[in-house]
Every structure is written in structure tokens, then in C-alpha cells.
Amino acid sequence: MNASKRRTRILLKDTLRLVAPPKPIKVSEWADENRVLSPEDSAEPGPWRTSRSPFQKEIMDAVTDPEIDAVVMMLGSQLGKTAIQLNVIGYYTGHDPSPIMMVQPDLGVGKDFSNDRLTPMYRDSPQLARLFGKGKSRDSRNTIYYKSFPGGRINIAGSNAPASLASKPIRILLADEIDRFAKSAGTEGDPLNLAIKRTTTFHNRKMIFVSTPTIKGHSKIEKLYEDSTQERLHFMCPSCDHLQTLSWRRIKYEYDEETSQCVEVTHACEKCGAMHEEHEWKRDYANRTKWIAGKKHATTRGFHLSALAATINYTWKMAVKEWIQANKEGKQAIKVFINTVLAETWEEEGQKLEHEILLNRREMYKARVPEGVRYITAAVDTQDTRFEIDVVGWGKGYSSWRIQRHVIVGDLNQQQPWQELDEFLSRTWKDADGRSFRPVRTLIDSGGHFTLKVYKFCKPRQGRNIYALKGEERGDGQETPLLNGVSTNNIVGATVVRVGVSEGKATVFSSLSLEPGKPGSCRFPLPHPDNPDPFVYDEEYFLQLTSEQLVTRYKEGKPYTAWVQTRARNEALDLAVYNRAAIEMINPNFDLPLPEPGSVATGAKRQKRPKKKNVSSSI
Image (cartoon, rainbow, N blue to C red; front, top):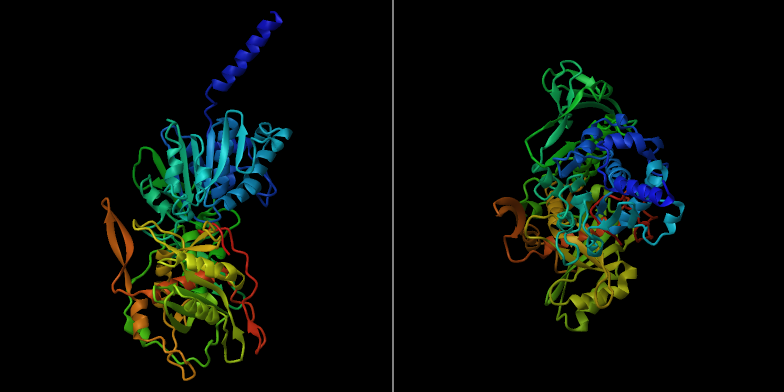
């Protein structure tokens, strides 16, 4: 055989290798054979073993089922959601090369995912490393947000960045923490729908949707799970072998308050009532658990699992400790536990309050700033003829104390009311020990007819933590996070804080429903002898504070909840939402000690915000 024929034969073999279908293996099999956990990605680096978390096998293998085009994962924390997605990416990089897109809540999270999780996997897993030679790191085709490999590519996108979603067609879509996606990708609409449209040209597309859930009726992952096989992992009772899901309601524990430790925790069988410890329920995990579907679905498999099923890095005793702490901190912390540990949606309780109840709760403060306050915030509502201002103190568990209600009347086209506003926001408020407090954040409503004036007022005062605010709310039941990122896309370059008012109202009403003194409750002052302000917390204020209620509406036959006004004025409620957003922006540490009496309390150094919530960026 001459040299020309040999070259032709080699070329033909290489071509056939590229077009031939890949060997039919499953994602879990690929991972066990090829995935290597990196030091940056695991406390125990080395070869991947699906047997360490057996519940992941069925989820991963559903992706490679030819009859399935979508997999929904409504999972709690500590269950390896990201690890599962990385295995899928590895499979469709090294075994069945395809165009892939990973969508994160924002590009910042996407950057962290690429640097801390994806790149190390490509580097340390030998099969994948061969696809990215030494020169690839400097290749212009391989960046933080884009990497190419023989037969495919991966794009890292952010739900708040429309340009990152506007890529070429993709076969494999992974959407992570979709309940924290931006409401809209610029002006192009729902980012999840935009990403899904990129898959329509592939008959063999695969879509993986992942998230911990949020509020019932507003959760994207809950909606997708309901339109799936609705599978839940069932465990055999160690005594009677009855299959059942692990339930927080059947968890029994003993907790030692002195040592802050869970002494014992067991789970009761729903059939025979026998109590068994965690290691007994999880013994022979792979053979004594089973995923059971709640309904049939031809193309979508859905999986729901709480952190109680975790096999590594998380125990029931840890869960009990989190639960105890959440109950001390209040409803917001309990909500986080329900969402992230139990992987269940949070359902708000009765959302209509009578104003007389709150009016009669007013109490006499010993000083303008009551005992227990660690920070204060201010919020400003901009009307055509006045500024409405509410100053609020905050303490442990997001307990709050109204401190001063103030109104500045005047034509906002003139300079005088703006000057008065600046003077008011420059003042301090004192506690009984003589400490002076300044607002750690002030948010000013930029809606209405004075948007540009608000921007121009706030821009030079951002050094004093005074920022413009834009309220956002959808009318179709889709939830917008309380802190939905910031924008500087305006003529003066002012930082504008985007606030989801619907979630804010739900949070405010939950706090108002608590008895005074409980963590997270709200307290109000009676008129004080040394208060020169005529605009006190009177009946009109409480009528405004309770001026909306949550109702059920329908769109295309599907129910959703929406806030509706029951009276014309609702400034007090809006200000309560703005103040809640202001305090959450600083991620406060309420355990830090106050400065010495007689000093100025300007707010402690801002704490680092965990990479979780629903916020593309914060101030």
C-alpha cells in the first residue's frame, strides 16, 4: 500500500470516529470511569465514586435516557447539585461532544463556577485534559465564559446578561438556581425561556433545570417539578421495610441548650412507628432506597429531595442545630431552612392585617433609639408634592423599631424640599446611653415624575450610603427577589437598587404578624414629649401600612397570587419594603457589640454575603 492510500485510510478512520455515535454508556458510568475531583472542588480529591451518594445515580442517568429531554432537580443543600451538573458537562464534553450552555443567576456566579469548578475538572480529569492541551489556556477561543473542544463548546451565561444568552444553537442546557434568575434579560424577556429557545434545533436536546425552591406559587422549579414525573426518594424502615420519604415532621430530637449541641435525633416510621437513628435509615443505602414517581410524564423526569438524605458532609444533627438557630432568628431564617434544607416552598400565612391591632401595639420608648437597635436605615417615598420618610431601627433576627416618620411638603421642581431632605438625612438619632446613630443605608424611590432629579440627588451622596431605588413587580405571579441587583444605566451614572416589592411585602406582613418582642417582630412608638414632628405614627400611618392584601388571580386558567390595594394611599407599606431592602443590603451582623456610650454608631463593617440569594450584585 503506497503512502497516499495509507493517508486516505487514516483520514477515513478519523472521519468515521468523529461521526460514529458514542458508546451507549450512562452519565454515572462515565463519571466513575473518568471524573477526578479537584482539590478546589472537594475536601477529598481523587476519583469520583457514585456509590458515595447513591441517590445521584438515578438523576444523572435520567439525562442519557433517549426518551427524556428534560430533567428537573428540586433539591436541598449538601446534595451535590453542582457535582451532578459537572458530570453531565463532562459527559457531553469527553464522551458525546455537544454544544453546551450553563446559565447561572448572574455572570459573577458564572465566573466563579468556571474558575472554581469547571476549569479544575477539565484540568484534572485525564480524558477531558487531553482535549485542552497546554496551549489551550492562551487560545482566544477559550475564555472564562467560553471554551471549545473537538465536536462542541460550552458557554457560561448569566440570567441578567442578554448578550450571554444570545449564542448559537445548543444541544445541552443546564440552568442552575433558576428561582434566583433575573426577572428579565434586559428587554428580551424571561431568561429561562430565551435559553430554552436555543435548544429547539436539536431533536436530541437535553435540558437540566436545578434549584432550591422559594415561595409557593412563585417558584420556577416548583412549577417545572409539577409538570414532571414528580419522583421522591423512599427509604425502607429498618424495622418493617415499609417504603417512605424522610419527613421533618417525623424527626424527634434532644437538644442541649447549654452546649448548643443535638444530643440525639431519630426518625419515626410512618407505618410501624419505630424510631431509628440516621445511620440505621441509611444503612445499605443503594439497596434500601427507591425513587418512586408521583405521576407519569413522557419526556420530563422530576426529582425532589431534602438535605435529610445527604450521605456526606451533612447530618441530621446539623439540621437540628440549624432549625434551633432559625427559630431563634425568626421567620426569615425559618424560610431559608424550609427552602434550602427541606427543599420545600415557603407558604406565607394570612396576608391581611387589621390596622387597629398595630395601632394598639404602640409603646412608649425610653429614647428615640430603643434598646436592642444595632443599625438604623431610612427610606424615602417620592410624591409630586412631598417626600414621605420613615426611619427604622434594626436588631437581632431583623426585629425592627419605627423611630421617626417625617414628611417634607413642597414643590419638588424647586430646590427647597431637596435641601430639606439632605438636611434631614444628615442628622443622627440617639439612644438612652447617648450613642448617636446614622443610617447605614438610605433608599430613595425613583419612580414617578422625578426620576432624573432623584438620580442627580443620590449620585454625589453615594458616599453617605444614599441610593436611588426602583421597585419591580410582575403582574403574572412571577416572583422578583427582594434584592434584584443594581443598575447604573442612566444619564448620570447613579447606582439604582432594584427591589422586588412583592417579596418585600410578603416579608413585611410576616413581620407585622408577629407578637412584639419575638425575633423579627415590628414595634411602634407612641408620641414622645420631646418629638417636635407633627407627622407621628397615627391611625393614617397604620391604614397605609395595611392597605394591601394578597389575593388569588388566574392567568390562562392557572392560579397565582398578587398584592392589591384596598385603599388609595400605601406609602407606609412601600417605605417598610424599602427599609427592609436597605438593611438586607448590608447583610448585617447583629451580634457585633455597640460602640461605647456617647459615641457615634455608623454601622459595622459590611459582612460578606453568601453566594446564594437571588442577588446579582449588592452595594
